Image 1 (cartoon, helix red, strand yellow):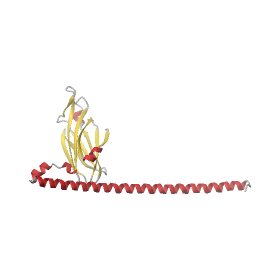
Image 2 (cartoon, rainbow, N blue to C red):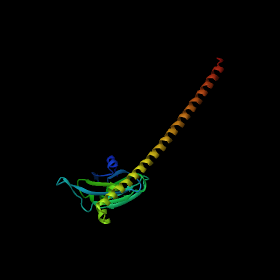
Image 3 (cartoon, rainbow, N blue to C red):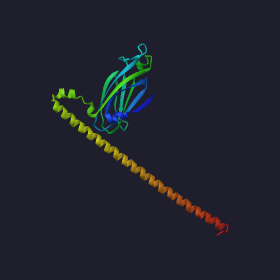
Image 4 (cartoon, rainbow, N blue to C red):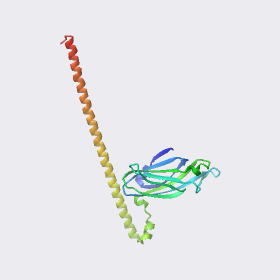
Length: 216
């Protein structure tokens, strides 16, 4: 299997977005998303198969499907499920950090088609972007003002999660930097001690040579 990891930097700024990519039979494509803890993520995708006669991509047949797998920063699977040609998947992060979202096609039906490429449209929404506020308003019978207040509250909560996540990252970076500096310092001290020991040994060796030749 071919694993291609795409770092979507725009996602970090927009916290969600729509894109499409092409995928071959038994090919696996992964996306890395930086997610705070206790954050809901919703993904929607739909597949298209290339039609050689029409020379364009058409909606995929029901026989085609996609296996979706999500791993947390500790490489533990938090979602692994087979879906159809068009589906929606949801998960909530438990650990802050880089989450890997991987998709690959089932080849049982795909191998029957000529062309060998699928187009997958993928939409990822993170945090409060994943909420359908129209549905929330209808379900909870909220007024426009109440809905706006709820949106603002959830946006503030998401910002707080992002800030906490950034602080954790800064702390890890500080610890890594201090550990690296300490190792470099000990290596410098070790090198100095080795050089001093070699110097002392060379001086004693030269002195013994000179004494043997009665030069001193």
